[in-house]
Amino acid sequence: MANPIPDAEALETFRKGFLYGPDAFLVDRVVHADAESKTLEAELDTGARNLPYASHQRVGPTHPAHVAAGDLVMATGSLGCVHGWLFHDVRFDAGWTAFGSRIHRADFKELARLGPPLRLRCQETRARVGPKRVVLRLEFRFEQEGKLVYAGDQSAFFLLEPELG
Image 1 (cartoon, rainbow, N blue to C red):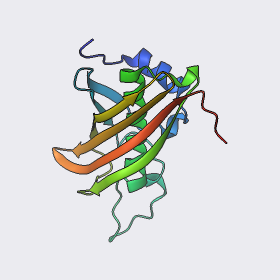
Image 2 (image 1 turned 90 degrees about the vertical axis):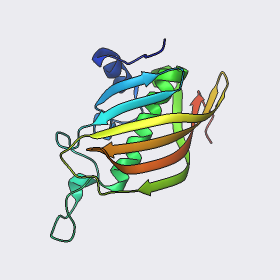
Image 3 (image 1 turned 90 degrees about the horizontal axis):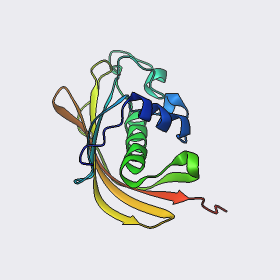
Image 4 (image 1 turned 120 degrees about the vertical axis):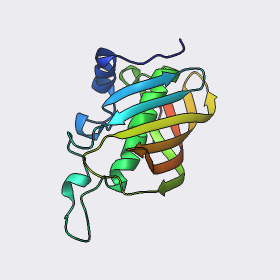
């Protein structure tokens, strides 16, 4: 399975079981998936959707409308969860949960504008995989119109039926 790109029906199945509601799932299309390199690419349509933080901006001459940092970080969580689902069989509707555990690096390189789509990319750089726990380190690169707008390095835990206290 070199390129397991989920079709619209599979992605809808993912959304139904996802840990957050539709407005907080910030991936619109998966455009590339490579199981061998554990690389995932997707798109976020910044013009056609209501972004959780950007929609509350007070826009003016010194504060242009843009994709807010909180939206970009939430997009990393959405993309990371699709990554775990696609490459590590993490199924939220089967008792799995996920938590971001560390943002090692978050670099906001350019202002991401509302309107043009963002190309979202994540690549797994480390993994510890067990029957009830998957720990991933992911590198993120988000581009808009060919320019790098965000680069990040983050870790996340995926846990099956955790006992949280």
